[in-house]
Image (cartoon, rainbow, N blue to C red; front, side, top):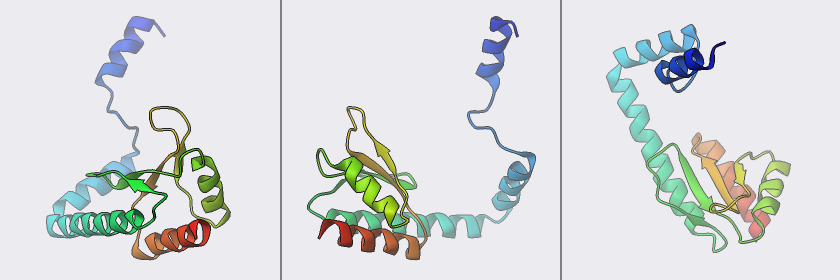
Length: 127
């Protein structure tokens, strides 16, 4: 493809590729705003609770978040180790190995039982 045409197409393309089914689901969810907002409130509450629980671990430093995840500084120089230990227990997070967020974990806010599994695994690993 001509590079000029490719560049023009990339400027008008939505930032994320989604399927038609996903787009239809989005429109359907927008029709039930009460349900949508109740789920958003539940996510915010879960995020705040999880952030507080993560802050109880002296080896972790959660950063304030307005997203559906918490960026959390892991044990300095041992973030990769913590990532591996969580994965061994079936808890999957994202690990960053390059500055300026070296040894940081990106922890998605999950359902209550998923958040509890994370905290339980962290207790086992960091105790």
